[in-house]
Amino acid sequence: MCGIFGCFLKNENAAPVIHSSLKRLEYRGYDSVGIATISEGTLFIKKGQGKIDIVHKDLNLDDLPGNFGIGHTRWATHGAPLQINSHPHSDCTDKITVVHNGIIENFNDLKIELQNLGHTFVSKTDTEVIPHLIEEIIKNKPALSLANAVQEATKRLEGSYAIAVISSYEPDKIVCARNESPLVLGISNNGIYCASDIPAFLPLTNKVVMINDGELVILTTDGYQIKKLQDGSTLERAPERVEWSAEMAVKHGYPHFMIKEIHEQSEVLRNTMRLQDRYLDLMSTFLDRATEIFLVACGTSYHACLAASYMFSKLAFLPTYPVYASEFIEQYGKAVNIDSTILAVSQSGETADTIAAVATAQQRAATILSLTNTIGSTLTRISRVYIGTQAGPEIGVAATKTFTSQLSVLAQLALRLAKKRGKVSQSEIDVLDAQLEKLPDLVDTIVKTQEEKVKQIVHKYANSKVIFFLGRGISTATAFEARLKLMEIAYIPSVAFPAGESKHGPISLIEQGTPVVFVCQKDDTHKTVIGNIMEMKARGAKILAIIEEDDNEIKPLVDDYLEVPKNIPSVLSPIPYVVPLQLLAYYMALEFNYDPDMPRNLAKSVTVK
Ligand code: F6R
Image (cartoon, rainbow, N blue to C red; front, side):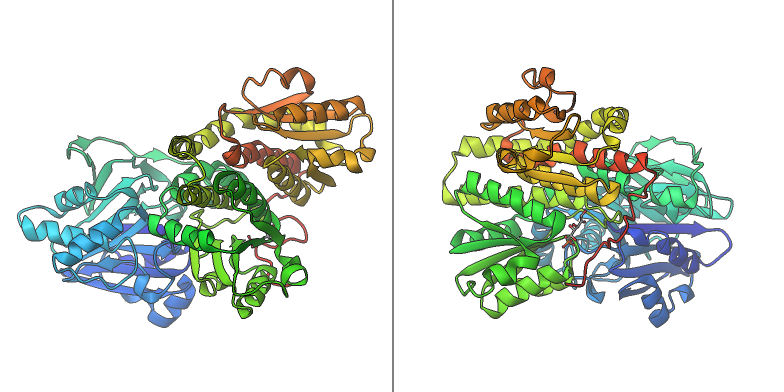
């Protein structure tokens, strides 16, 4: 989730404007920054690793000449957060340069093809194929305009992109194109802007033009032209006014980051489906060969590990041990050895307990694998293999989109292992693969259909001394995560147990009206869960169930229900089933006027043990 920006100004140098606009996009990532401008037909570039202020202090980003240019603030996905991988990326002749937000899925094939044609690559990014592709097209068809060359290049790209391209071949325009990554124009009396997001130019103008997937834009001193990427036909689109404050714009009009991030989950899940096969294959090969596997994490990431232990067992017939990172050294520290494999999961990649557990295991020669949302974090540096979970920066303290992205990657690993180990039939794998592909749309549907319902019922559960969360099988992990979300942002004491375990003690807390939330996916556990609902009802509990749409067995038994679409395989169920529960926690916090983005006593990255 990088930020791109470009501008064409009438009477000023572009670099200071690009610099300040990138600062307003820093919430999209700040691993590195770069700016390119054109002045008197010559291309100028400055870029560096680290936050914008640090790079600016070193390089003075503002003194680049020229009244137009492009810029980028990076959140690393392909290639570590190093100077060499920072955007803009250029072709072999340094005449074409590109900033990009998104993921080019087929970059490796394109890179090999271009290298065979003599192109030299300097970075490890997926983006660098774009300028080389444009260069190659122009080399073969010198009469082609820059815009047409960009249009032709995009036909070879698979994946998501919002790009802005400038070139000394045509030193009077910026060419942009979009597929699945955001792109918006801003129009003012002083100039014209293109950006990943409105906050970038909001202090300069509130007149915006939204760019859609499959569109190309040419910015010049005279204005903008929108064309269809497919056939080059021109589209007319007038600017509209947005009435957002700067703060609202960063949150995309949502009142809090947490709800924005809940809504972003469908897009994030789509990105997790674009992971490079070779990394998933490599990690699943390590897991397949392992003698024993510990899934190590804290908090929400631990719940992803708990869910993964069911996935690995059910799909790949592979036992794994989910362990709280803070307990790992005491519980297993002396037992790990060269035959042990640790799969550490951490959104930040910096959690002190997770790093300490991994460091101990590493000293004892264990193999370290990891999933993290932060490429370049400590965890990535000490792992043999790591995979980025593609969620983009998460700002709300309560993890939401990073959780579902972790689950998606873990499910993909489990499926690959299933295939490798030949434990599940190909037809079953095909069904699961297809369902995984559908999840982004299903999550979107859940948010759209259940948000209003959650708002309507939340007050009924607000004034409770304690709330129970129960699930069976893999839904135990969903119940644990739902409890953590509610507790951490709405400060309601909550209890989560595997539903079967509840009668071994916790049930003594149930009084008339005690809320019990059941996660009721439709699988082999369904009948037993109904039994558990009846046990709770018999003791006066008020039941809220998360059910499959039209689950007419459970509907009449419960006080309230929230629904998710039908036929979601049990092993994938935590991804959709947690969404209504994230919404429940969020709206519960609002009932009490708490700030869900900044819960008391908590930090986004816990770097103390
Ligand atoms: C809860 C939450 C925390 C984190 C935990 C681990 O909403 O965000 O429980 O999951 O602190 O953090 P990471 O994943 O960064 O290791």
